Amino acid sequence: MRAHLGDHLVIESPTTGATRRDGEIVGLHHDDGTPPYDVRWSDTDDVTLVFPGPDARVRPPGHPSGAGAAAPPPPPAGPPDPGDIGRRLAAERERQGLSREETARRARMAPDYLAYLEEHPADPSTATLIRLAAALRTNVRALRGGGADLPPGQGLALLHPRLSDLAPDECRTLLSTHGVGRVSVTTAEGPAVVPVNYEVVDDSIVFRTAPGSVPAAAVGSEVAFEVDRLDEAMSQGWSVLAVGPARAVTGPEEARHLSESAHSTPWAGGEREMWVSIRPTRLTGRRITSDGP
Image (cartoon, rainbow, N blue to C red; front, side):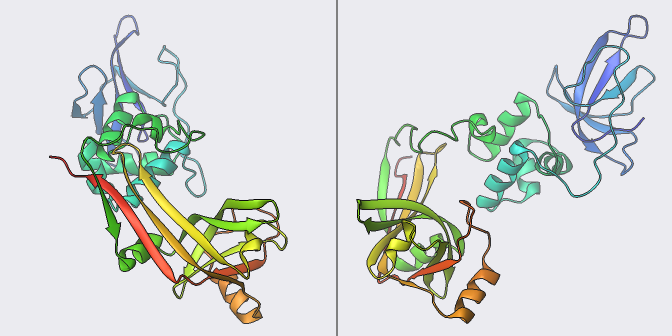
């Protein structure tokens, strides 16, 4: 018998073949997938060490539980291909600065199983998602990608909110090294605010665009650039505003250095080889936290 993390261990009746008990395999003790296994039983939610007997068999997640179900496929070749849930798990965990071990401890699961969820397409049970959401202080809907097309901030306000100003050094820290922000520019049609992928290089905010585009209108004028982050589950967040003159990066060496050190290509795609640099002359920010017990 061989199994993979996330498979189900099914205990059948020796006479009828009907399922008597089943659980999710959340821990392996041998690299080749042979027993014993750590199993989280569906009827009790307890995790126990199991040495399967002749009445036990393994089936992949989502596979029919009836007799004659196919054996689990071998692990996929090549690099891991995390599914949407795995990517969201890893991104939220890393955003909060949590290790896999700490997250797994909070969610009461094996670290190897969390690694499996983050690195492979998987369909964890609702109970597993509830524990992970609680460990990451978010909700199951967010981990599944629900609300991706909704504007942020639809959660209830805090009972005792506290709005505090951020010091310039803290604003620089929150800007980090790269991300997605919004630049406010004045165009022939009026004011516009557009999102851009940005980098922070030598205290300047730089982004790539195309000549003649809306973000390119920032060149030669003073503009506002804003970055924020909302924690929907906790109704908390912060916002940083940078104001300063924008210029086009015309030096070939400087432009090449920016292109080679960029963390990602613009999400909008297309030919966007024009670099715009904003040198902030004013950097302010605010944070909303709870002031209650």
